[in-house]
Length: 350
Ligand SMILES: *Cc1c(COP(=O)(O)O)cnc(C)c1O
Image 1 (cartoon, rainbow, N blue to C red):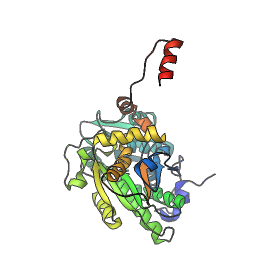
Image 2 (cartoon, rainbow, N blue to C red):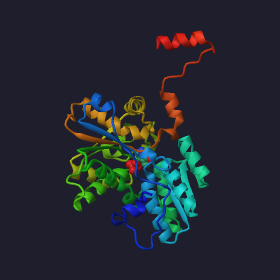
Image 3 (tube, helix red, strand yellow):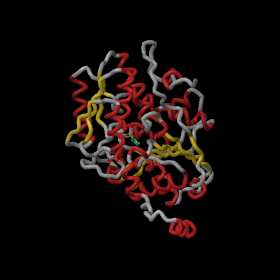
């Protein structure tokens, strides 16, 4: 059996002999070479890191397994998070397998159905409040300070540590770091974590180089791009609908130290990339995930030359969590009578 994430990367993680080695099968996700878009966009090599293949369907599991293991080591019996959805699904799953009480604070009416379904079936205590994500995060910070409950949002440094492992896997798969890493930016924990991971691997000689970090916010919630807090963030991509990123400074450092960029893409660009990814590559990511590909397409159109470059787009979560957006943005289905002649006509005409 493959070693689990906590065991495999023990030397790179904040584990001690007292840290319980828990797993529900996180990490070790596929890095898949593009079949069609690589040529159409004009990249030397283009890969997708399929983080939707994690057990709860997003990269959040990598950080959560570390955060929950450390919470148990610190003898907490409850965990809490604010969430736009994927963090709550992940926290609830690890809380369940470890027998912890999981409190999840979500913005009422603003969470994709699949994600809510996950937290519910994993038996978390879900508290839906009339507030956006940023306000919910403010509240859980206070609650976690006042009560013996472990905060498992990405403010928890163990989350970032665990999320570094995706960068390790990319280097292990390619033999070195890629030239560019494209990644969606919401709360900015993930871009911070990847950068830490790439730097860490270079320091210990497992990689010769580090990539340029290319982070993409949604235009309606582009706090880092505009260099100001967005009080009422908007975008179809709910996982990056965040107006005051907790790891703001980490993201800026990743950009500056790597020689990369943080830019934004609008909802139309996000949904175009979301459809292309599915229709041309067979990869169904959630809308926020497509911000990485949307960013790559935007830069290629604006004159960037990736033709001799190795590019990785992180596809952060699975599209199955948000079927409503898929159905609304895809071509409608064709309804027909159950009649051979009519069906033949349609099939022959294409
Ligand atoms: C959490 C999440 C993001 C944003 O990651 P941050 O670390 O908050 O920047 C992007 N996509 C998906 C699917 C997510 O779950």
